Image 1: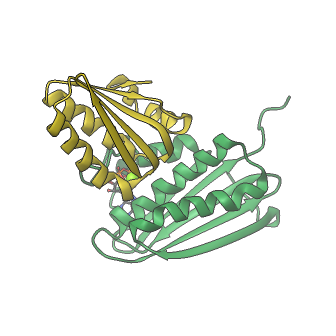
Image 2: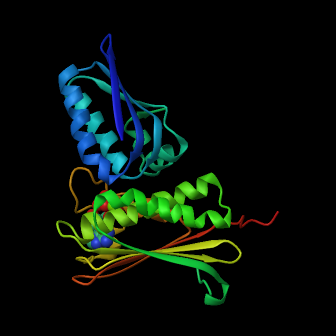
Amino acid sequence: MNVQYENREGCLRVFLSGELGHHEAISLMARLSALVEDHLPARMVLDLSGLEFMDSSGIAVVVQTARKCQSCGGTLTVAGTPPQAQKVLTCAGIHRLVDIR
Amino acid sequence: MKLLKKDRINQMTLRFPSRSANEGFARSAAAAFIAQLDPTVEQVYDIKTAVSEAVTNAIVHGYRDTLGTITLTVRLYAPATVEIIIADKGCGIENISQAREPMFTTGGAERSGMGFTIMESFMDGLAVRSRPGKGTTVILQKALQARREV
Ligand SMILES: Nc1ncnc2c1ncn2[C@@H]1O[C@H](COP(=O)(O)OP(=O)(O)O)[C@@H](O)[C@H]1O
Ligand SMILES: [Mg+2]
């Protein structure tokens, strides 16, 4: 799992690549939470276009990160979601809680 | 789904310790083995996802803070059905129907309680056998050929 980000005009864009399962989820959640605290973005975009695989561990990552953004006064959008990750998020009904594209 | 032994065309079994570093290996190994049935890309991902859920459960819940052995068996049936069995000898499940409910979890903040729901909706068959203190066996089945007549 590789994490890269850029912060431009209050929008924090984070790019994830590789596989996201339970093995990667705990440290990723902490990493994303720290990024939100450091940048306090008005808008955060979690770009999943580089994800090769995601299981239900990714659901918690998305939901926790959305909550973290909200508690810091911002919003989260999930972008570039590959079909496999989309299917997992839809199955869990996460598209009703978080803006997923 | 009732699968007959006479229709079994191939099988493999893997045994590995319940380290989270093995999750990626286990789901990829299952996906590589079923390739010989010529599945679609979506079917491969469905199976990979379901296997990842079951193996993760054995690691996170079954063996919790201990280390144990997980057995992954993949069986292929003619003309094109796959059966995958994931077994642990961990703590077992007290109440299986409660565990299978969406959003039910006994795990931490990184768990969503959606593992069984995903296994059920991504596969054609899910059976769970478990005894507290003895362990858990999850059986996943999926038919890969088009099931609708043209
Ligand atoms: N192999 C297992 N051994 C013991 N308990 C299990 C096992 N698999 C699942 N469970 C129980 O079933 C619950 C639901 O599992 P699941 O739907 O995958 O959600 P999650 O893993 O997010 O908790 C778990 O929280 C756990 O209590
Ligand atoms: Mg699970």
